[in-house]
Image 1 (tube, helix red, strand yellow):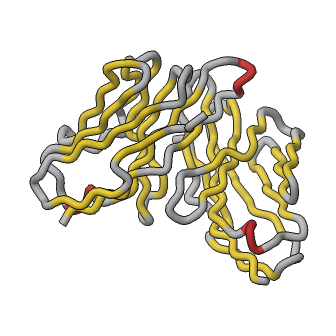
Image 2 (spheres, rainbow over the protein chains, first blue to last red):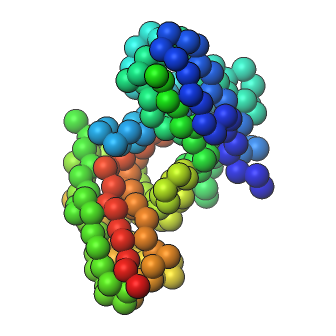
Length: 116
Length: 110
C-alpha cells in the first residue's frame, strides 16, 4: 500500500498567489482530513470529508481557504489569495470507518508551504 | 471545550534511561485516545489507540496506559532511534475528528 500521497512536497509562492495542495487517500478509506501544523498552534484540523462530502469545515480559517473532494481518490485544498501567515506544513490524512479499524488516521508526508 | 495537554514539552534522556510522557485531557465524552510519533519532516505515524480506563498497549520499548483523565506513554530503556516528537490526540464520542496536544519532543542521547 502506497499510503497517503500528497503533492507538492514543497511550495514557495508570493503573497496574493493561488496555491493548490493535492491529496490521494489510502484506497478504500472513506474519511479524509486536512490539517495544518505550525510551531505556535500545533496540529489543527481544517476540514474533513466522509464519502466525498464535507462534514465539518469549522477549522477553515477564512474564506480564502476552500477544499474539494470530487471523488474517493482525490482531494484539493486551495488558498486564494495566499498570505505569509498561511506558511505552515499541511497534512492530509485518511481513515476507515469500520469498527475493527479502530478509526485511526493515517497521515501523508505533508506539503511545506512558504508564502513570501 | 475539549482540550489536550501534553507534558513535558521537551525531554532529554540518556540511552537506557526510562521515563514517561503525560497526556491529560478534558473532553465531553471520550471515544478513543491516540498516540502518534512524528519524525522531523514527516507526517505523524500511528502508534496506539486506547479506548477505556485501565487499558494498556505495548509496542517494543513503548507502553501506553489510560486513566479517566490522562494517558501515559512509558518508554523503557530507550535508544537514540526513539528520538521524535510524540503526539497525543483524543477522539470525541460521535465524531471522527481528532484533537491533538502540542506534543513532547523526546531526545535520546547515546
